[in-house]
Length: 224
Image 1 (spheres, rainbow, N blue to C red):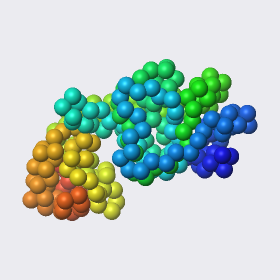
Image 2 (image 1 turned 90 degrees about the vertical axis):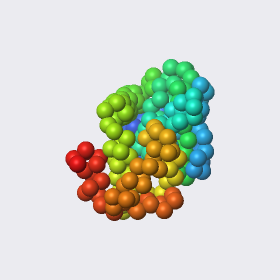
Image 3 (image 1 turned 180 degrees about the vertical axis):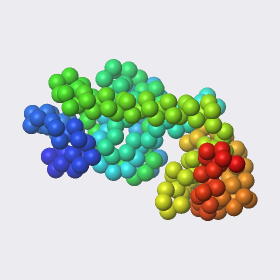
Image 4 (image 1 turned 135 degrees about the vertical axis):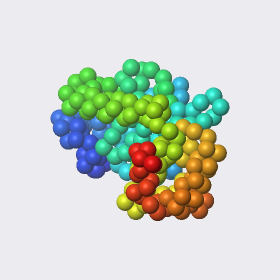
């Protein structure tokens, strides 16, 4: 397990700062976990008995409405922790959302009692929790502002640009995109058709290619 700790030290600065005794506690309380894409890790209302430290992959944290519509709250990547999970674990409270792997993911799952002990006794662990909490609150404030003030075509344009990255390509179904931005699949399909007709993207089933990044940025910032 010491070798696995070395592999997550690359991503988690607080692990490198732990004393030898704290590292021994972490090592003895952690076990490797692997999840394929779409594997559920936590569901709303469940107890949080483990905290994941990611080596590779990605988690998606999302809420589901009574009608089944989804909206992505945030993602967790190597170097990050699920802050809602940490909060529920430390407070011994039910988890308020859902978590699933959005890619092939490997991690170390740290026992809740051991992490609570680290939080109580280790300053670097407490600093990490507060740092991650600050990042989450900033991100959720941005999400609230987007939902409240930005039109859906702006939010879709922002999603396409962020997810496509420098290569300009992404793979996702209309249903999956709708789940990320919090709308209906039909709305996404209609907007993608508009973007395609305007020459901003090419779309073929699950494959989307950004064709005109500059104009899509204009949609994102409503400069039309």
